[in-house]
Image (cartoon, rainbow, N blue to C red; front, top):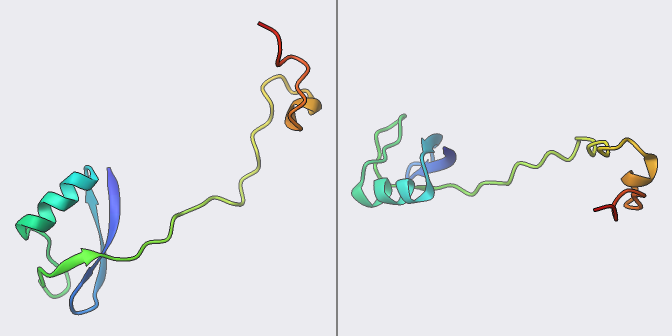
Length: 79
């Protein structure tokens, strides 16, 4: 599932869920999208900013060794 920010020709912004981008394209082409505020069917995708999680800490290395976190894992060459 994916959510798109949509915009009607009257400037109302709203969200709608779609199973895929092809699902959005099919509903838009068929005129099956409508603004929940005014009923306008002239709807387009609004400009959306990607959602990034820049506040999350990097995951701890699997073995727990401090050298692994810097990319110098002592166990990396073991097969």
